[in-house]
Image (spheres, rainbow, N blue to C red):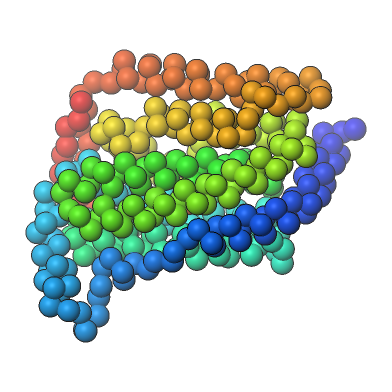
Length: 327
Ligand SMILES: [Fe+2]
Ligand SMILES: [Fe+2]
C-alpha cells in the first residue's frame, strides 16, 4: 500500500472508531453536566447600574488593590488569557477533525460556550484592574488569532484528543498556580481563576476518558498518535513575537514550566495505564516504550534549561514596557 493509501486507510479506521465511541462521549458529557455549576464573568466582576454600594466600592477599589501585582504574575495572566483567546483555533480544530451533527459537535459547542467565559472573565479582570496597557495587549491578541493555527495533528482525531487532554490539564495547572500567586495580592482574581481551573479539570476528565476508550479499541494507532503529541505540546501562539519570552518569564517565576509539564505527562500516562497495555504488534510496543521514556527525557531537558538559566531582563509593551530582571 502506498503512503497516501495507508494514511487514508488509517483515517477511515479512526473515523469509524470515533463513531463507535459516540455513546461514551454522550455518557461522559452527561457526567460533565451533572458535575458542573455554571458561572459567569459578571458573578465576579459586576458591571451594571444596579450594583450594591459594596459591589460598587469593591470594583472602584480594584485597581488600587491590584497595583502591587508583580510583573511576572501579570505576564502569567497575559499568557493564560492569550491561550484562552485562542478559542477560535481550538473550536475549529475540533470541528474540522471530529465532524458535525454528532456527539462530538454537541460536545464542541457546549465546551466552546464554557471556554468562551474564560477569556471573557480574564479580559474583564485585567481591564477593570488596570493591569495592562490594553491597546498593546489587544494588538497581541489580534496577532495571535490572525496567525492561524494548523498543527500537525490536524485531521487525525486521535492526536487531537490526546492534544486536548494534555492541554486541558496544562491550562488547569497554569491557572491554579497563577491563582495562588496572584491571590496574595488581590482576592477576586484568585476566586475567578479557581473557577476557571475547575472547569479545565472537568474538561480534562472528558478528553482523558475518551482517549482511554480509543486505546481500548485501537491500541497501536492510539499509542502512535499519543507519541506524536506528548513529547512536546505546541501552543497556537508559540510563533508570535514575544510569546516564547512570556513563557520563559512564567517558567522562571515557577508558575508554569517544563517541570509542571512533566507532571501533566505523568498523570496522563498513568490515567491511560500506558505501562499496563499489551499491544499486539511490534509497532505498538515500540510506541509504548517510547511514550514511557518521555518523562525522563522531559526531566533531562528541564535540567539542561535550569543549568543554563542566568539572570535575564524582559520587557513587554503590554506591561508599559517596564524592564523586569529575573533570575
Ligand atoms: Fe479555558
Ligand atoms: Fe478547558
